[in-house]
Image (cartoon, rainbow, N blue to C red; front, side, top):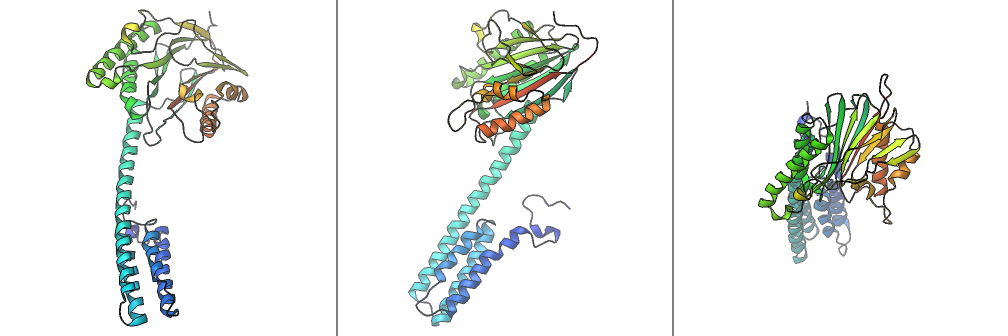
Amino acid sequence: MVVRPGERDWAEGRPWQPRWVLLALPLGLIAVVTVVDILAPPHVHLGPLLVAAPAVTAAIGGPRLVVLVGAVATAAQLAIGVTRRGWLTVNHQMQLLALVVVTAVIAVFVTLRERQQREMTQVRSVSEAVQRVLLRPLPPSLGPLRVASVYLAADAEAQVGGDLFAAARTGGQTRVIIGDVRGKGLSSVSDAALLLGAFREAAHQHAELSPLTRYLERSVSRDLAELAEADRASEEDFITAAVVEIPDDRAVVRLVNCGHPPPLLVRGRDVTPLRTDQPETPLGLGDLAPSDYRTDTFPLGDNDLLLLYTDGVVEARDAAGVFYPLVERLTAWAGDDAETLVRRLKHDLLAHSGGSLGDDAAIVALQRTPRQGRNPAT
């Protein structure tokens, strides 16, 4: 039988769960204070220590349990006063009143804490659902390519933000896009969704990268303009992106770079940024966009690895303010396959930044596997 969150531990007939074992601590405190105070000399008063019981209970239970323990502590305080003097002095009355007030305050704070926890759980569930829809997991292989990817949101609770990636198989080739929406967190999710939706549809409709990228620019500009009419804060939105195309039968990679950090080609211990002569403007700038996008071609041989990333990777800082040395790390990890490299990169990046990134970060690694019958780059 599965116990759902919020169900009582004794639903399975197992009352001695850790939570209930810990309940012995405040109850034991009440018992010890009561016995010692009754047996202590007249000038020794330990009753005020009973206020610690509901305070400790707040760490292990909800408001009802806090009130229950507070009631037991109040009864113990009453028993101490009656047993020691036969009546309640003003001092004991004030101690009783203080205990009741403190218990009530603690119960209120525990109630607010549980409400916030429920809201955070709901937000996390929604964020996970959004991430599954927007950033569909990339398969481990696409044609002759081994693939690995990871997404790290700056907003840890949101788990999704303005960085994006997607891949499509069409016509004997693999097309991949990686992008970065201006800004971060949930406010940039809608812009990322616009580009991802456009790419997944257009990747199968255009034979070349240049018209594909031009379609993405027009689609994003149009949608961002519509958003800007409803929200003036989005008037300057844009998306940097790199669109790559890797044919199955040629040892090359074609690239259109729209203001995005250059992909890195890892060949043995050599790490080479694939810089274009004239990087294009980011997507979504409308009239500033070129009428035709330039496609650059680079060699991509067997076992070569292409790393796509967003600026959240290279702009991550350590405690001393030093940027993450991505090229140095890739050089040191020469020989790693795509999956191993991305896994190491993720852990090392988080360690460098102290476990928390200042911006969203996305990483995609594409590694060509040896295959017979492939034409060399021309």
